[in-house]
Image 1 (spheres, helix red, strand yellow):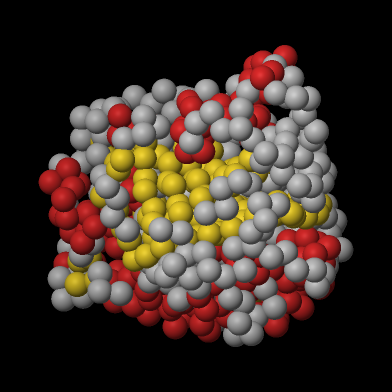
Image 2 (cartoon, rainbow, N blue to C red):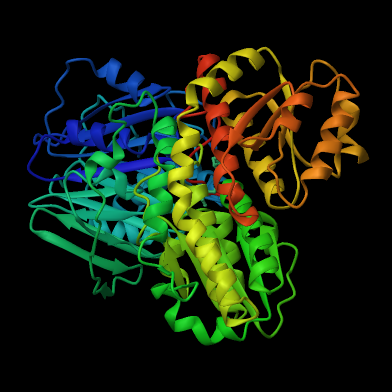
Length: 632
Ligand code: M6R
């Protein structure tokens, strides 16, 4: 959560920072702020509550000269959503300015100590202590005249340096318990920017004569193709002459840069009104990109290069433990059905935030699989670490190349779907499910799956993108349906087997985009409780394609109708029976049962999107959420 960008280079910093942070706004949008260091060693800046647009509006046409600067968009953790709590934060004299993503767990103790030493705080945040800790390292408050208070518009006081900037940062960081992605400037060192990371993602874009530090790659695409991903406990010192990376013992690290192949256009909305809609429409391409080059049609098999080195472990695996959050968790649940039915291997899927706390019992032959679009989700990363530390081969399905989970996993499969910017995950889901289908082929063909079955699955998978495109053509009809049902404040989403996780996913989409109560429930389970909620004001969405549980679903629809409940059904093209009982039907083409989630999820994504838009909500940045959840 929280987006940070830092710039040191040849261009005026503010436009670069604003553009970069706009691309990261999905990480948090409670407030935003920046600090620019002018050549006169004067720090100037602005802060605003709300989105980046509020900050940009406040800036208006004002110029903030200076080629070094930092910017932040906040997802509040400690301290309310106020201007005072917006980053960047500074020390007493406005010499040190920093933007932070993460949580300083011991900030209260540190703040008390610093208060006793004479520091004065301007915010309620945990972050501000870091600035004061650095100040204390450079120029202890007790040893100088009373503090004057730094303000974004104030002139920086002259600090008498007791050590180098980077040393002071290092010493301060050693006192912190918690997580950080940090970018820091010092007013009297205009040619240096320091960045540091511990459990919060941070990378340095290596441009020509410029560096951009950012919490994720979307912010640097326009300026740099080569990036250095910082690891936990690393600090980068960026100057106009070059960059160096150290650990917190100041031992220099030799790091290799990585190339990012996303074009800047992929992080733009182009002709779509929202990223969410663009990304729903990119679903077919996402499946194509995730599957391309990985199917061996003749053999009815899959080839996943990223898993080569763990093939012996996969071949001998006795159980797969999947762990993920939110939408990625739902994809994992679909994978569980696929892998058990066709892969012939037991699978357990866990919500990552629960995984390590329930003290999982690992067994010989276990293989762990994390699924994460961002590759930065703290809970998923923690689950992966737990498995890896216990000696379980740890695999990952990840979209963002070079992300922490991607780097930490023993082996993995990249999604190759370009940036997903909308906070609601859409194209990532279909990509993850299609990769899990590939994994099912790979594992299944090593076990009981026949070549005939393998070919059927593989062939059908190649047809999925076209079938998805067909569903997307119904977007306007789904919008009409959203209008019809727009007045309701509660929805029950019901499915069975492969489409139970889709029911959960449909409900999650509606909740997060529209702030409307929606519950996913097993259609067979509803009679054990949820059906009590049903009346004429509580519609149900049934995901009921013609598959092995179809008849059961029809009975469940009847049960809802008998209680005057309204029913929207997602059904197989040509199904007249369902049209007679449901109030409204959205049709999807026929495919193999195990692949239906790739189709049935599409109308649900569209429904949530149109529902949210009709309510006048910012569907790309739903309240209280952030795209990449890097805190526990
Ligand atoms: O980046 P990840 O796939 O690890 O993210 C996991 C969840 O935070 C994410 O899917 C979240 O639930 C989305 N907002 C759902 O639309």
